[in-house]
Image (cartoon, rainbow, N blue to C red; front, top):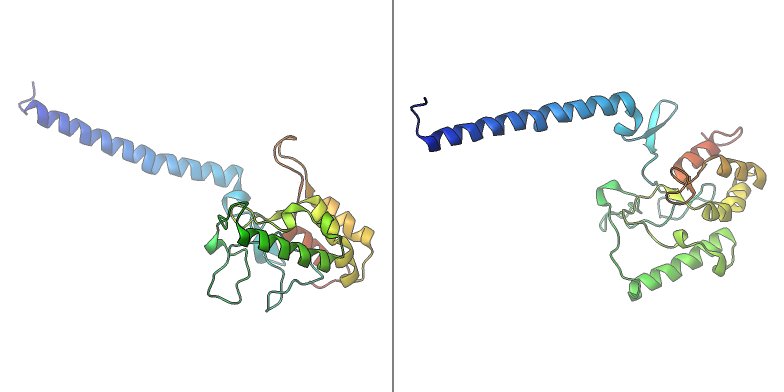
Length: 212
């Protein structure tokens, strides 16, 4: 029989339970999950980093801007969807900054959003030489995170002629790369087909005679 008062024994049992559960859920379980992730999903667990000539150039899970020092799109590259993930003070930060991930939180009737969409539509149509009515939605709207690395196949198709002309390639060569980097629906039915912009642009630079 314990000589300790019942209430003290109950508290000691609770402390022991806390220690055991802390070890299991705070140390053993995380370490086990880390081991499984590194063994089975090494690339994904480490950020799905993309390397070119041994140098990390980005992540396939994050969008990346392809613009000049003034934020103008580089015509030789496919452009990602618009991004609000940028610093409001850094004038060289034009989007796709993981430190500022987030949406605009503007509703569909917000005048600022409507003006932004119209301006993006006009700029996209002019850049790619397509009718305003044919501009795809993902070319003028941002994603919830502002870091979406994908564009729709239609968005990519609209940019093929511009990229091909800037690189002195045939449209069929560029379209073949677009098709290669187009991913289907997850498990065949989740989401929509999509094109990874970073991987596509890297593949373009790797073509013979192109900048690397």
